[in-house]
Image 1 (cartoon, rainbow, N blue to C red):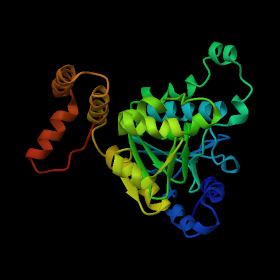
Image 2: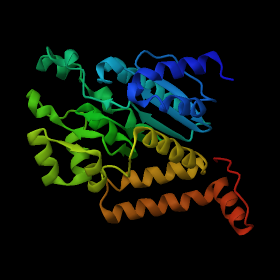
Image 3: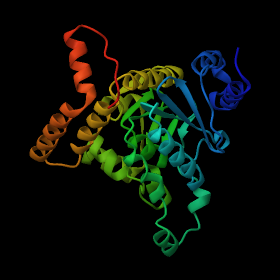
Length: 297
């Protein structure tokens, strides 16, 4: 029923699920039944549904600790999925125990200022995702600390389980967030609350992430979180690709532009879509009470 590459991907996922989630594995078989797996050392790349790319961080022994090698693979996978016309949305997740429990301290503990500065250390960790035009959904379970929290915050949509744990504990190591934590977290929850968390290194829960607006949805279980992200990604992938990319672009511009400039930018992009094939397809289908067959042009 399942080919060898699919079964290999399922077996590779078992260490991530933990001994208490045995029931999770059979359900994943159905989810990954049409998957194709790319070969990386630190991540798994699969296609759980048509139009959906799923990237799973895969360093279980290190609780998915982030490293330059991992980001090299992650950035490569993101670029390939973004360039793939058949991919309409991407889900990024980790294991049930850890989305990513922080940066690999072994990689950075002996760095000097000149080495960090001259090599522009950590820039590659946050430079690719902002340029990805395909919507990215983070499905966060377990620990998302330090760089893991920053990685989750880079996503367009963040889902988490109620037992997820977020935090920027860098202050406890004598440093500060370096991959956008001080900027994106502050934008999400406000200056005062972000200042408290970053200055004390205090963690916050998945429930609080939902209450504070960090997470769009909070799920009871890790399985429901990942499946919910895949379902949302599938729904997005079923929309007009050109309209989805335009919508993502204007929402992101709202974070950079004053309201007046943002409204003008939105209106120009809105007008431009009347030159797309999908605008004609979508409005004609609506008028005729039919389901649109998108051209993504």
